[in-house]
Amino acid sequence: MKRQSPLSIGIIYIALGVLFIVFAIQSVSSNGWGFFSYFLVGLATLDMGSGVRMLILHFKIKAIQKSKKK
Image (cartoon, rainbow, N blue to C red; front, side):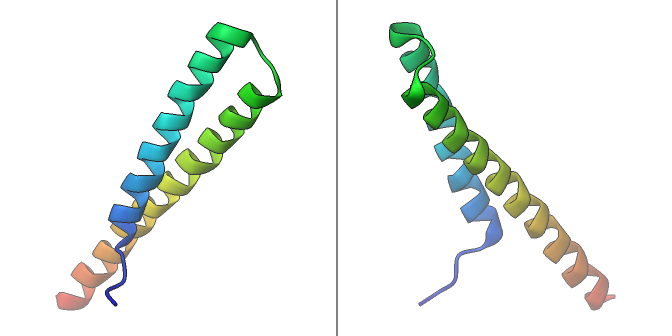
């Protein structure tokens, strides 16, 4: 089984974060700020933060690999 790269995982997390943001906007538009809206915003925050961390990890790994080749 091949391991996923941090880049692909980061993109998936960011896409999920955007999806949860869209759902939260729709929820707030129709029902106002309720528990479910806050829950969706929390999930979006966690996913976006994880996605950004994975992207940073990807670029750090690439930089380390590039410096080892020299």
